[in-house]
Length: 370
Ligand SMILES: NC(=O)c1ccc[n+]([C@@H]2O[C@H](COP(=O)([O-])OP(=O)(O)OC[C@H]3O[C@@H](n4cnc5c(N)ncnc54)[C@H](O)[C@@H]3O)[C@@H](O)[C@H]2O)c1
Ligand SMILES: O=C(O)C(=O)C[C@@H](O)[C@H](O)[C@H](O)COP(=O)(O)O
Ligand SMILES: [Zn+2]
Image (tube, rainbow, N blue to C red; front, side, top):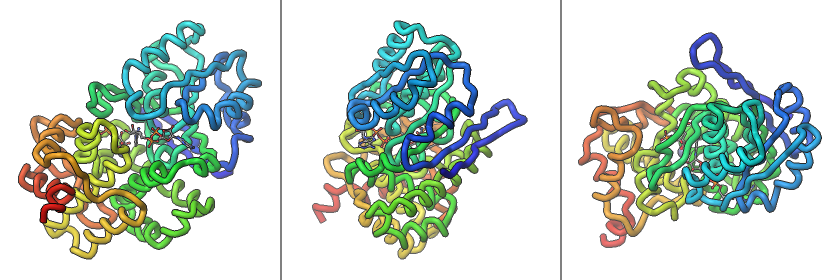
């Protein structure tokens, strides 16, 4: 069992919690007991797919620790990440008499984690929650850092709060049941993480492609721990995204626009991959990246079964949709560029022309016509 502490003290934004890696849920009860939480009731929030796989096991592990353990299950997928599902969860908590000191467990991917975290941040003005991430994406990114929230009318993460978990417990064995597309989505955020902050790690990822694809556990554990450590450093420095944290959004401005226009038919990690290629294109056109570096980023997406083109959308519509993402500041977009491989920066000078050219470069319909 390996651990990492995410911690910030002595400022108005304080948090401290462990990330634990293990190969089963056997030691989850001990980790929860160590927290000496006041909770008498626990609710496991999960989705319709994960509930079939892991709910019973987790419920059995947690039941001896609480007077009551309930389960709230919602339909799997991004389409459930909204205020309607949060409302149903509030109703479940009220009907089961959950109080201020009780606790939620988020058992699932990023959708479950974001939604549960948001409900925990707002129910009775804030209760505790624990992250039990079961997708690669959730293990490398979404379960760490305290960003919680839901979509609103297809606008990504428009309603949310910063609310940190009390513990993140990763059962690495859950990655075995992920399908290929879901695994690839996690790799979209892994590539992003190396590109923004750690060239050595990015190169390591390239060199370990076959072991990663074969899901060799020690290799995946090393990769996930590195991603969490990079995210930890960024989040500890800038927990509420006043500055540096925005680099974690590489690929997300164009990625979120595509996710929205595709009505969540393309998955978050796939859209991030497309957005990262587009951001790398602008960086390349500005000569921050060499052509070898740019084409390697594209090749890495292909190697990890991520898309590098999107069909069925007009580039102008994608550009227009970027204007309603959260990275607008006084009418100017905060766009994340790669100043070099391993070093992302927040840039406020990217023009609509640059963005449109980058979007055209990933627009499959235009490329097919050539
Ligand atoms: N808060 C953050 O910092 C942050 C970071 C990155 C992404 N996100 C959010 O995370 C979401 C994407 O997360 P995701 O890719 O995990 O999606 P997800 O939660 O929808 O999970 C993907 C699919 O995999 C299934 N699944 C989960 N675990 C499984 C397992 N072990 N075996 C088999 N199937 C399993 C789920 O039921 C679902 O159908 C997006 O909403 C995105 O905005 C948040
Ligand atoms: O933790 C962060 O900060 C991130 O930006 C991580 C992203 O991968 C994640 O998708 C996040 O939800 C996007 O942030 P948002 O503020 O644009 O919703
Ligand atoms: Zn993301």
